[in-house]
Length: 160
Image (cartoon, rainbow, N blue to C red; front, side, top):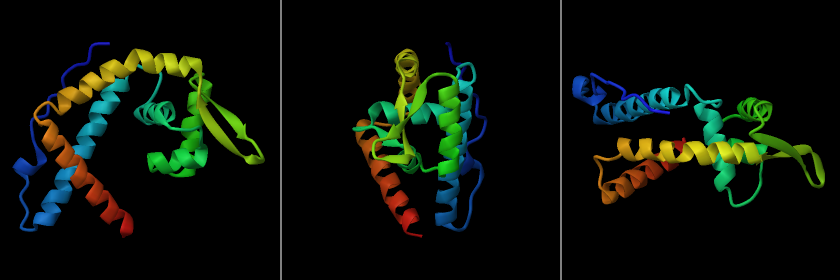
C-alpha cells in the first residue's frame, strides 16, 4: 500500500510562542503527538486494524511472555475497558484470541493468531519504513537523546 505524504503547513513551535518555556515545550510535545496520531490514522486507513489495534498486536508479538489483558493495558497505557474493546476487535477479525489463564478463570491472556502474525509480517516493514522516514532528520545519537528525554518526562509525569 503506497502511503501519501502528509502535508503540514505549520509547525506548532514555529507559529506559537509563549513567555513560559515549559508551556511552549509541553505544547510542542502535545502537537507532535497529534501529528503522529494523524499519520497513524492515515497509514492504517486501508487496513483491517486501527492504530490502537496495531500497537496491541506489536506488543503481543514482541512480549517476552504471554500477556494478560491487564498487563496489555499497562503496556499500552490504556484503561482495561479500552483493552477489552481492542481485544474484541482483534478477535472479531481473527488476529488475536483470548485464552483463560491457568488457575484463574477470571483472567485471560491475549495471544496472537497465525492470521495476526501473517498480517504483521506483511505490514511491519512498511510501518518501519514510515517511522524511519519520520525520524530521518535525526542522527542515531539524537534519537537516543530524544528517547532519554521522553523517558525522563514520562517518569516525572507518572509521579504526578
